[in-house]
Length: 380
Ligand SMILES: NC(=O)c1ccc[n+]([C@@H]2O[C@H](COP(=O)([O-])OP(=O)(O)OC[C@H]3O[C@@H](n4cnc5c(N)ncnc54)[C@H](O)[C@@H]3O)[C@@H](O)[C@H]2O)c1
Image (cartoon, rainbow, N blue to C red; front, side, top):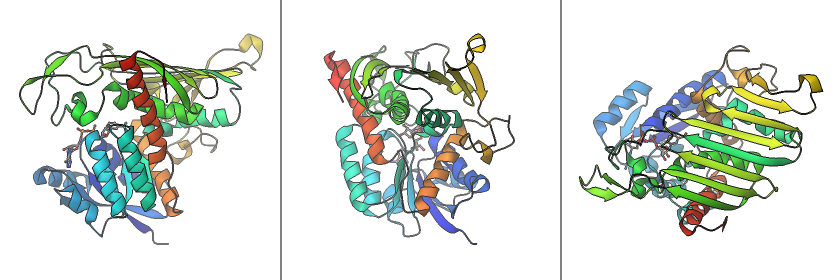
């Protein structure tokens, strides 16, 4: 049977533009879907760059103004892969134009923006999703299954880190194309919205709501030259952030993120300790789940390393790929997310994380920053 087209217009062609384009190109080869992705248009401010990207990745056309792209009648969905300060305006325009929206994370610059976005999206009733892709690394999705099967019992602790080291140099400027993450006006916040937001999304999904937080942040390098103005300006983002929290289920959370952990490039780790079992996961070894089960026979009890690549259908996503024992990588999490989105889209449903789910993460991020500023516990 002929597949229905799912015509994508993508805005931005940087890191995520490539990750998503790769996912769109692969998804139909590995998943059985009602829709076939059509790479209809890519939008960038520079026509030459947009054309070069379109040629490389197979987009049929280019636009240089995202407003024109959003209004085009031959597009079903807009994929927002631009810096955070553009997410709100574009999403709301998409909602008004009746387009499905796939928006990069964090949802917004702050909760107020996120609320406006959710309202517009939900009023329009358009399918929507936010790219918190780590939920769909098979070993992480597998933890969700194990929690739902009750294998942990009561959960006591949730711990997560996201460590990098790329902003240690004082000479690194802020702002502009490559360094918008250091500019509060484009990013909203530093590691909190960029990295901890991922940890928070996974945590809310696996372990439920967070009730309150107690945080500290630090900006180690207080002034940097701004690429756009050429002047040395105050740095408004958090370079590092750590927080404690209470989850609604009574467990305690401990989160840390920094761009000043020399030697670490993108080390996302999480650990959950329950009454009957514990699990650990590490982005640098992303196909493995470290698992401890207290019901194992005493003399053989210990941590085991599960290579999540089974083909029985009992481990998530892995039967769609190569053969058992051959792992997949980072980019596959995006393929899984598109596959799930399209499965929901075929039924007229949104799959998580929706804008509403991502607003909950935004609430935690805002509470973390407020707590760091006030040096007090902050309710979410
Ligand atoms: N899910 C993840 O793991 C993940 C990873 C990285 C980034 N992100 C998110 O993705 C978004 C983009 O980040 P990135 O790393 O791809 O950034 P990037 O700097 O690599 O790319 C940003 C793109 O946006 C384009 N752009 C900027 N302003 C524009 C405008 N007005 N119109 C059209 N295009 C414009 C730039 O030209 C560039 O192509 C951010 O919201 C970021 O937080 C998510």
